[in-house]
Amino acid sequence: TIDREKLGKIVFANQTLLKKLNEITHPEITKMIKKEINLAKNKTPNQEKVLIIDAALIYEAKIDRFMDKIIVVYIDKDEQIKRLIERNNLSKDEALQRVRSQIPMEEKAKIADYVIDNSSSLNKTKEQVEKIWQELMSLTDRV
Image (cartoon, rainbow, N blue to C red; front, side, top):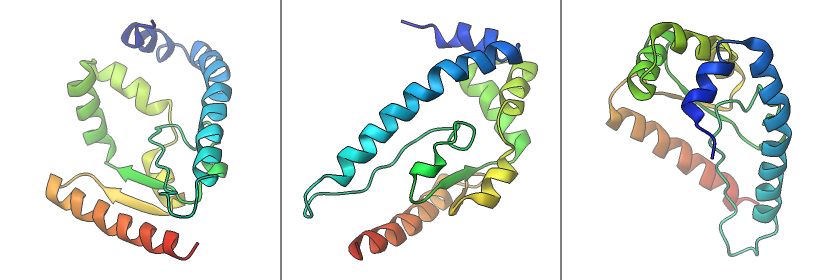
């Protein structure tokens, strides 16, 4: 198994290594996602055909072209760094390296189909998710 914590400390401190890792992993991840999409598309009419892909690098890996809709969960940069530090036990510099390695959240939000503002309460976030889910379900009813 891969120690993701150690790997992250190495690659996020070295852009060349991060690029190499992405060159290795992104094609494999893309294959897996395309396989799941094809499985979902081939289900019978009475089966659920909604597939949710949770991936931080949808735009960076250029897999957005396989998606019908993109939902970005938005948080401002300061809160993003704070949460990374707390969740992953990172230093501020390590958290900044990770954030800088991605397309800025503001850019992702501009090109997404839906944006969930995750800076408020859990209830507010749930309300946004439920609203988007209802809209997506209404779209699947038309297919």
